Length: 372
Image (cartoon, rainbow, N blue to C red; front, side, top):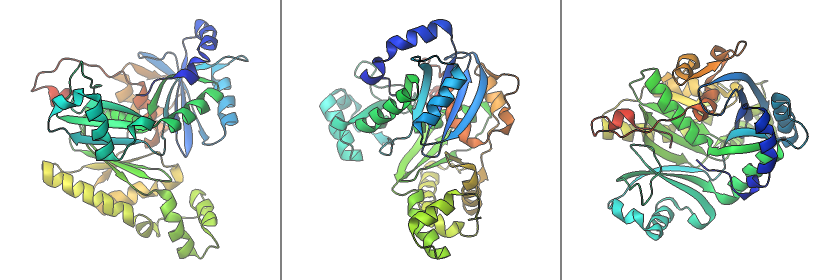
């Protein structure tokens, strides 16, 4: 969604030498918890997934070592990559325009974003998309009544871009991970013929995002103003720990089973989900069929199971092979897609080439592109 700026352009000349020798590329998802990396035989399908790696988030040196090893880089070379990130101030919102024609005025659109979402457009990267087609909206292409606004603070984007460059990557594209995951989920639902809407929950340390995706359409997007950090005081109190830092270390470790404490930890999240799904089901007449939690490390997978049981719905368990095959993406020998959990859906979502086409009114909903 967000393309490289001057920071990346500084190293562009160094990429030419690398790309002259190799068409290989890396797809990299950088979150608060981990870095997921895939080496592919090309940057646009059809291609082969040659290798998959995962490392803990944080150290740029560790990531630089991994990138260099996976791409056999020489000193001064950069790997051609597609990168997704999760800035703390990221946002994806769906909104209705009473008079879409007014959106052609940049000043009106900026004021709309400021007033509706409390986003400082002067300090943010903002993309506007038509909700049904998923395509970028502009004065030239026109604005639909239903729009999606997504973006993040500019300083956070630059910080993460620089992180990628310092790790030896030249981002061909820099995307919001939330957008890539929503897009991937929509594409997967069509490929797997999932008819019921999916509740997508993204929990990061500071905040969370809840989405409802039906087919390829993003029907609902709203923020939740708390994340994992809000759970540490509860852990501290329940277990009698000396401080929140001790609670945090225990929470992220694999040494304690938090399942029994789960309802207390997820009480606020559950309330928000019940509110969102209840409103959606009343408004649309559709019933949520399954939930998918992205990002969270494996030792916190119990959260998805607990929320699914409490909400009375299933947990989405993606099977990637057929979906990727339908988009011209194949695993190389030794790459086991069946062993991967749901956290990889966003990374694979970046790989898909989302086609655009002229739609009839009847086809529009079925063919909507949810890349935003």
